[in-house]
Image (cartoon, rainbow, N blue to C red; front, side):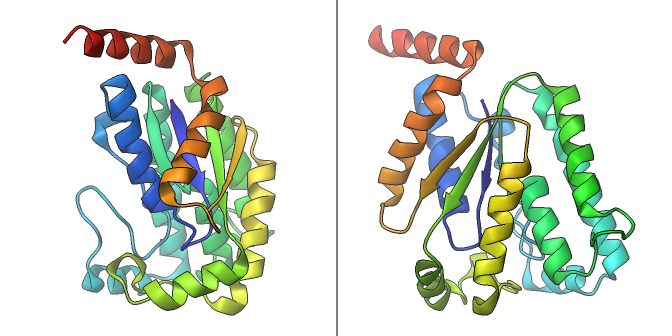
Length: 233
C-alpha cells in the first residue's frame, strides 16, 4: 500500500503516520518499506532518518537562498519518487506540501517562475505513474480553522513545530491550497478524514475503513497470510 497524508500543520499528519505504520505492521506483519515514514516536506523542520533536524540545522536551511531551497526540495521529492517502485510507501505531504510552502513562505515556485510548482507538480505525478501502477492513496486530513489555531497555541513551542512559518492569519489560505492540490492530484483515490473532534484512534479507524476498498491484491495476500500465521501460533 502506498499512502500520502496531506494536511495543514497541526492537523495530525505525523501522529497519523505513526499510527498507520503500527497498524500496517500489526495486520500484515511487515512495516512500510524500510520501516520508514517520509516526513520531510515542512522545512526547516524535517522528521525521521537519520534524525530530526536540530535547531542549528534548521537555521542553516532557512539561511539558504530561494534558489537553493527550491533545489533542495525538488531533488528531495524526485529522490523519494523512486520509493514507489516498492510495494509500500508512507509519506507526509510530498509534492503537495512542498508546493504550498515553497510558494507561500520560501520565495520559489510562483507561476511563471523557473520550476513553477504548478508545472513541476504535474511532472512529479507523471513520474510517479511511470514508477508504479498501484494506486497512491491521497489522504486529505482536515480540521476546523479554530481547532488548528487552538493546537497552534498549545504546541507551537514543541520540538515538532520549531521554526514553523505558519501564521494564524494564513490558515484559511493554506487549507484552501491543500484542498485545491488534493483535488488536482491524479495519482490515486482521494480519502478524507477530519480531526476536529475525533480522537486519533477514531481517525485511524475511519481511515482504515476508507482504505480497505483500495488495497492491492498483494496487500490482501499479506493480510490473509499474516492472519493465518497468527491463528496457528
